[in-house]
Amino acid sequence: MTRATTAESMSDRRDTRVTQARTTLLTGAASGIGRATAVRLASEGAQIFACDVDERGLAATVETITAAGGTAVAHRLDVADPAACRAAVAAAVARFGKLDVLCNIAGVMSWGHASEISEAEWNRVVAINLSGPFFLCRAAIPHLLATRGTIVNMASAAGTRGQAYTLPYSVTKAGVISLTQCLAVEYGKRGLRVVAVAPGGVKTALTSAVKFPDGADMSLVAKLMPLMPLAEPEEIAAAVAYLVSDEARFVNGAVLAIDGGQTAG
Ligand SMILES: NC(=O)c1ccc[n+]([C@@H]2O[C@H](COP(=O)([O-])OP(=O)(O)OC[C@H]3O[C@@H](n4cnc5c(N)ncnc54)[C@H](O)[C@@H]3O)[C@@H](O)[C@H]2O)c1
Image (cartoon, rainbow, N blue to C red):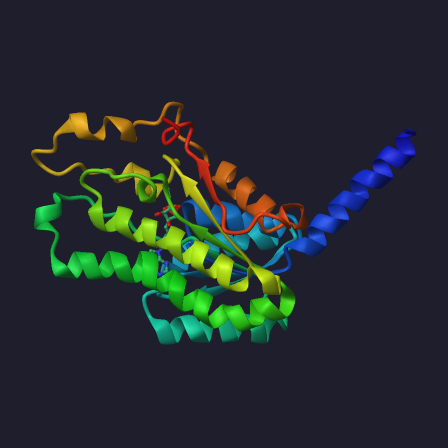
């Protein structure tokens, strides 16, 4: 193969990727994995409708993207609010004319002994981590069917195994996996792909705030310790970039573990 042909095929490939990740509504865009994913997808040509409750963080993400020549719009969204989720999807479609990708990345952690979890804490974590993704999927599905689009849900290794001291978090992440699989089965034939990513430890605000409860039995949480150093948010973003691309055309209903082997054994 000549050098020219190689260069040509590389640019073809790049062009294909650019057309793959077009209009993207992404939650959790103000920080960590969400911010890294917004920046990565924008660098591949996606127009990002960046959502979060943290307006200052959102502004920083949008600034990073636009300074690099990309397109991003900040939209304050509390994913626990069903009407606001519906309005966010409508606003993204109004802004960009269609929706190709939904990335449900916003989430909160919760530490404590299971027997001491308050109703308020349970309801808060369920609302943000599980109801929010459902509200957004529900509102986005008609638009994503029109574009044969993709949903990526951020699950967690914590949702694939029993884990001490993170009950509401783990239960909601298991729910996110089921949400992913149910939608993949229901809509796959019509061209909508729904996938999940299940990271282990990633260097973000969420992991820097680890707080085992008083009296925690540390022998129960040994498996939480990753087999490798924590991942960078950009490593998770790279996986999302693949999952929303046409190269992942046959990937549907999958739960991609990125955890350094934490859940392999
Ligand atoms: N960091 C890890 O080790 C890890 C591992 C597995 C899964 N995850 C998941 O990755 C996702 C991103 O987490 P992160 O590690 O980047 O943490 P992060 O705290 O850096 O980012 C979470 C983002 O969600 C936003 N958010 C919180 N509540 C919201 C709400 N009600 N509405 C809209 N936005 C809201 C926050 O403002 C923040 O910007 C979460 O779903 C988390 O559960 C993280």
